[in-house]
Image: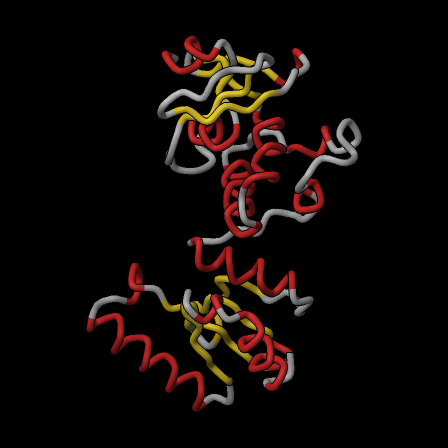
Length: 216
């Protein structure tokens, strides 16, 4: 509230998303104001004249509506982070930004809002699905049961499974051993199982070639 009053604006972008519970709070507080302002320590100011129906109050703080907040996020977040935020907004039954698409036909990032939000359990899953979409791979089933095991992504027709490895969920010896037993069982039943890490997604061209070689 102090930041909003100091800048004479409304909470917006990533800070508004944190207030609405779409994503964790991080970095500087973001404020949208209609006036040109000098930079202020700890604040990231955006200049825009917002229509009254794109501003509301939440927890007593002037803030962009959920629709406008998602629209602003599309211009500043990587696609995988945006999809995570849109998914969380849907889980919380917040209205989506589609009502603003016609109002702002040339706004940056609007194309990403046309995709249905991917329901994922982690940033790694969201980033992997964004990679698949960008490289025009077929969409997998996610968090699905295969032969009694929950897997991260699966293409049943190709009998291909992708498991996404992160230290958060796989960083213990018990998890390591459990994952290898699962891989052996699925392989014995005729499935191809590959494991992909965050660093693998830092080399998208190489990863695309490897997945294409597996028949995707």
